[in-house]
Length: 74
Image (tube, rainbow, N blue to C red; front, top):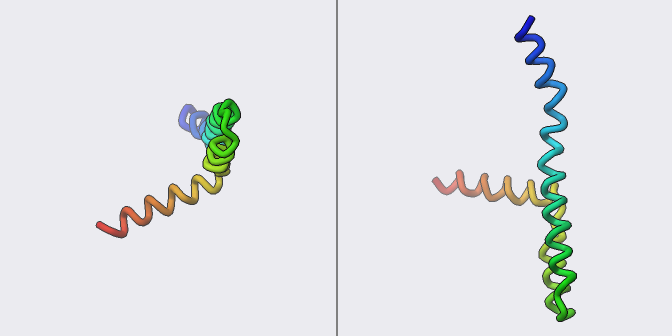
């Protein structure tokens, strides 16, 4: 019975754990955007905002591509 309770809890919690990463990423991106907006030079601000506009899905894809490339070289 105890094992079933733990398994059920893990199944219920897993979607929240998976979305937690994207929430943290979005919070970091928001903080980066606020820092970019503090820049006085328009060109520097534009460059900073451009560098920090990657969505979480794009970030994950880039990360997976890098991981895959890293294992192919070995």
